[in-house]
Length: 117
Image (cartoon, one colour):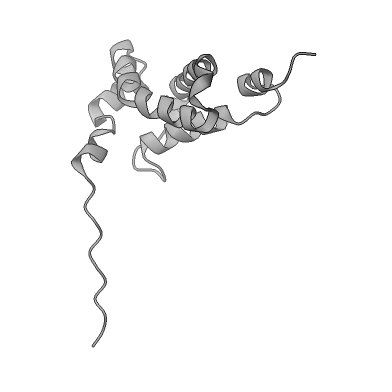
């Protein structure tokens, strides 16, 4: 008798609710300020949580700077982001945040991580 593979677990409603609705996303892509505020409200918690885990809770000023830098990059690149592409919007935004948190020359994280000369 062949083994039956289990059905994939349903996505919890709470997880689905973390994505921005399509109407607000399209408005944000057209650079409407109210939609941008909505985008920040939906994703600021996950962005701060990720940056906090990566950098440590005691680095609040750096986390705030990197979160702001993340959303500036999101707003700059959002018109080119394609819904239904290889990543959900939340994945794309958190990828931008994680890249901002890795110290590389020229980044905020690099300048903050280096001791003064």
